Length: 314
Image 1 (tube, rainbow, N blue to C red):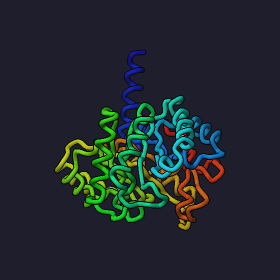
Image 2 (image 1 turned 180 degrees about the horizontal axis):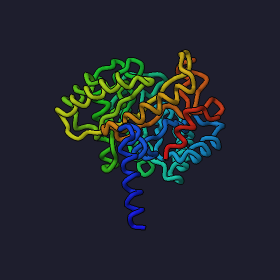
Image 3 (image 1 turned 60 degrees about the vertical axis):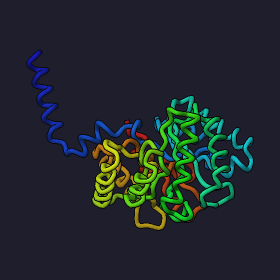
Image 4 (image 1 turned 45 degrees about the vertical axis):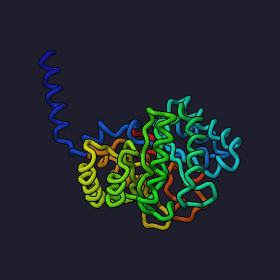
């Protein structure tokens, strides 16, 4: 019997050794503790609360990203507190970890750097209330993009990030604070952040919209990592958005699933990534064909192929 066990172990070890490196790494390393979802349930889940709750439960989602929108808390705080309280309580009941993205001005579609006093007041309001229900705070979103910061340069972002970090840490010293996820592994922007205020974030975040183009992403990721090593060693990165749209493109739902699978496997196998938050839990119907069709679920929360893959990640 002892010999049989030894033979089995040897054969099993040899079979693992013949697996491709990415498949081997993916089989053991791609888990729900490393791969989660952009959900934004608080803002986008009205009249679908039961569906959001059920889909997140059936997929055993462990990490989510929520948008804490400056405008809504400063415009109608009590109503929105009730909304966010409900959603964050749902997450807490399931021991789901939350990345809270804090972003934008107090007026609708105002992407200028907010007044310091207003920004600090908003941060104090939200962090004091939700520090026990949020695990990671992300300060702003895509500050290198003209769509989300005006002007979109590291200098304009400096006060947002510095005030954000100092305010959060004063209230919740143990919290992880990320920079607003860059729109790609933008080593130009990130290097100026590291040079001028590299002590004002705990880890670097960026987004991945390469839609299956792993060779190009690998080049950009390695270049980004080589730059970061000059300032901080041992950094692992947070991919706070990674998606692939089926709208207005030649990408089918099946190809979307294959792309997300390939990039997830390769990013985790690289050893450089702390977390990946897939974008997005579902399709929308108000942003235009391209922006509306990143969902792993369709508009009515029915599974697309990418959802079936995600739900089966162990």
